[in-house]
Length: 227
Image (cartoon, rainbow, N blue to C red; front, side):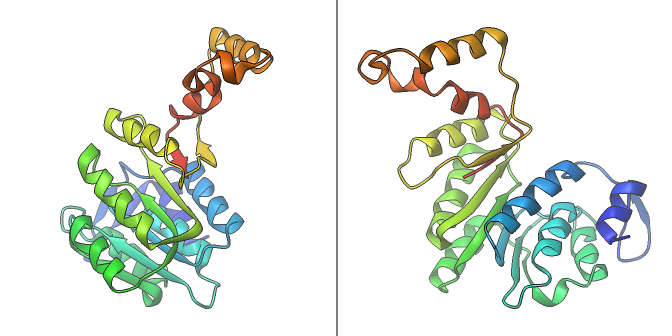
């Protein structure tokens, strides 16, 4: 059994001193599988995560790239002491620390540094603050270091600020929504409207674009969205 499976099964984590803590506020098993599938589908090797906490999603990401030659995992979390340094401890316990680059600083300090240092990544997972303007900065600099064709995942899209950012990203020519985790279910009325819109003749001329892609709007109510 892997450390990730052990933690999720026991719902407990251990700090560096061996003290036991209840697992909470973490990325669940199904969402971890979603992240791994994105990494595998896109052959990602150089991954970055903003927010570490107990390191659950980090274990999933590192597990997905651990067998690759040029693997590297950039972790940004200024709050590890608040989380009893359990996230970094779990990465060490799992044997991933050799390819981890950990930054105990805020993302608006680290991401510009990585960009100026010429870092290029294949995959980014943003799971930290829920503040719109801070997340805009994170996405801006992740865009600069993410390779063309790379994947960026926003978590907690249910928060108004994050959903607003996700909606803005769908309107940018350089971003495309490719997948979502736990998409909100379409109501019967919305589903009927979506089908009706799809068969309207000359819909591009008659119907405003924002009303055409109802499926896209529905996916904006997911837990996490991949671009």
